[in-house]
Amino acid sequence: MAANSVNRQIVLKRRPQGELRPEDLELIERPVSRPAAQQVLVRTLWLSLDPYMRLRAAGHERYFPAVPIGEPMIGGAVSRVVESHHPNFKTGDIVEEYSGWQDYALVDGHTLRKVNPSLAPISTALSVLGMPGLTAYLALIDVGRPEPGDTLVIGSAAGAVGAVVGQIGKIAGCRVVGIVGGPQKASYITNELGFDAVIDRHKDEIIAALNRTCPEGINIYFENLGGPITDAVYPRLAHRARVVVCGGITEYTSSDPKSNSHLQNILFSEARVGGFNIFSYASRYDDARRRLAHWFKQGRLKYREDIVEGLENAPVAFARLFEGTNFGKLLVRVSAE
Ligand SMILES: NC(=O)c1ccc[n+]([C@@H]2O[C@H](COP(=O)([O-])OP(=O)(O)OC[C@H]3O[C@@H](n4cnc5c(N)ncnc54)[C@H](OP(=O)(O)O)[C@@H]3O)[C@@H](O)[C@H]2O)c1
Image (cartoon, rainbow, N blue to C red; front, side):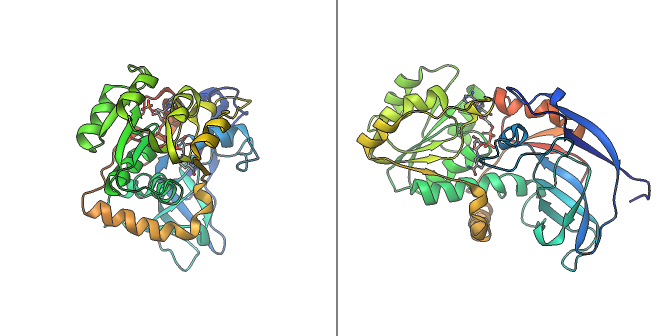
């Protein structure tokens, strides 16, 4: 690294109202700092863009700490170690950490995780073998408790989390029904991932499509959406169904998120509705990662990435998550591997 290297950072300029827009963010330049004892300086290679960032930017403190105004946006990244003052890392190591929307980051060695580049392309540490994959596995297994023959319905089924949920659902013997936006995604989950049925939220009438694809009711609903699709799903839950409340992207852009009022349906179906937060499961990551890697090596877990070139394009690209125009795990290539 040159002594005068500049660190480009995308910082939060103001809290978003509605969608997180490029005007809410600002690209600034700061000098790259040298690491202190136990710290590691990393160069970002891949940055993950995820829906939760909208909540962190808005500052829903009840769920997560807010991104401070003037600080880089939160974000998971895969990086290369440039300089290490921590005994576990050396220059050139590939690592993963929530090091934010920036070219360089100073991180504490104890929070860094090494990525094994011989296992899979390193970007998968942010997709199928990273936080979305871990979420899919742990939430489905722990809260969804899939059984052979269950009908599993997934919102945003071609997305980073949903696509893995469906594939694990198939491994567990479920009948998997995916809800997606558009024909390309519909074809992907049925023809490439082997889901049993698909509902295109742009084309199909949701209630009729759920009745058609889930004639015996829904045993597991993997909730990523909220809004009108959730309204249509809940009355169709089977007896003792499980609802995995993983996300609610339709409500993330609201400054006053409302909860869906489905208590009567939950009561009468005796459904089990469980909240899930990946950050509470840290002690199980290694185990889950081993399981995902095992299926991955067997060719039973496919993945798709939607790659944006350049840190400066992250603010515009982020909106695609909310427009549904990302197709696969949305990633930013910040610098060449
Ligand atoms: N609880 C946790 O710990 C945890 C961890 C990770 C992710 N999550 C949640 O999991 C969900 C999926 O995240 P992801 O990273 O895998 O994102 P993703 O599914 O790759 O991308 C978001 C997708 O959501 C769908 N969408 C966006 N706006 C929508 C709307 N108004 N109505 C219906 N669908 C809409 C779009 O897919 P279509 O156009 O195909 O419908 C869009 O492509 C999110 O709710 C996220 O917050 C939760």
